[in-house]
Amino acid sequence: MTETAKASPPPRIAIAEDMTIYNAAVHKQQLIEALGAHDELEIDLSAVAEVDTAGIQLMILVKREARRLGKQIHIVAHSQAVREVLDFYNLAAEFGDPMLIPARET
Picture 1 (cartoon, helix red, strand yellow):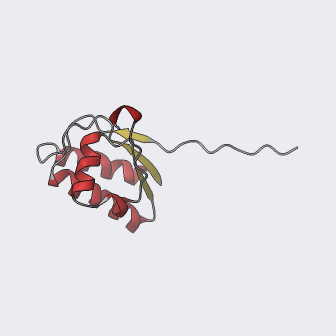
Picture 2: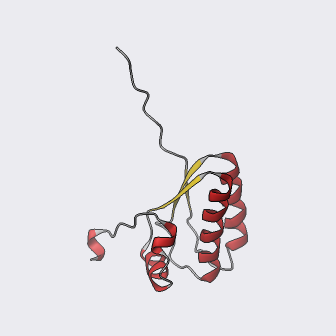
């Protein structure tokens, strides 16, 4: 009998602060370092209460850098603020990550 090895889920980084110009440099360093250390990574944005253009640019940068390096980044657990900004800029398809809307928000 052969046992199939279960793949472990990729490491997950949870962003707890707002993704604004005030936090962009710290988030950028954290995400780029994590991308360098892993071939696949999940970014949990469920606690993000505010996103501005700098936050959007950071998400785009990390996705593009992952593609360039042949790695995978999955943005998961989008907060309502993140969903609203991605919808406003019409970028949901650009990221290619499924966005689930919790039942309590519908």
